[in-house]
Image (cartoon, rainbow, N blue to C red; front, side, top):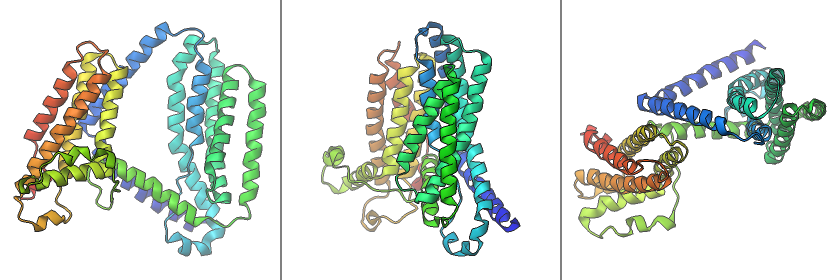
Length: 400
């Protein structure tokens, strides 16, 4: 028993250290400022909308659907590694102790999002419904219980079925969670209890199926690898993750981006840089993601000063991260074998960033045309981007 607890403790401490190592690069100063303004502006918009919210607004269904969807996605964090398929086989009878620790952490780490979503929705429920305070708190208790059951059920389903057709299990649990929460919020307590009994029965059924099944190490290893890879890809948008290799896609529909580049020796790096950016998922999706975030913010936040600060910060983040990434010389490239001036790559990167920041400015401006003084949006994006290009040094320049 102690050996399994020690294994979990060591792996958990290593996992927390790995997460902290990269998260300190994610929540930097400018990101923190953006988050403060976004949360503040979002809260202000929300409070203003509540003043004019119609009494017939389906708040119960909205809360039930949002929370139910979150509850259904309860993939377990097992921290299982590939060598465990061999080295933990002699201890398989003690694995329930290990998995109990893993599921406790999964429940605690995933519970916050469900509770936060429900708490944010409480002012809406108080505004458009006549629910007593006691019933709202009962809803919170039910959400906590449902999260615990969802975590246990998804783990047991994956355990007994090796993860096959997990989407069917999730849809079923999602529907049941939505109906239970809606019943609790609409005074249908009897129906909610009946549905909760059905869910509990399904949970007991899965537990019995797991009892005689061997540990599906391969499935949990793959699940854990995919989960950590998603985290590393996210962290890679803010800092370099050495062991992460991004995927490459053809994207023939974007060939026009570098088709206009002249076939000349002095334009060699322009062609390579544009082609690298378009085809590399890490670079392309970084630009796309930050552009979409800027566009969504200017659509839903109509406070000019807030939108200017946010789009300026995201413009700075886009330009800075892409410049460092594209100028990185940590890996060997074929163009290093050819007699092309070293500084040519820097000029090519600046050309690419100016081109795509103009596209970002156009997209964000179109989305913010309903705002007052929206013409300041493209000006801020382009000015911040240009200043970032001129006042920062690239990775390859620092290496000289």
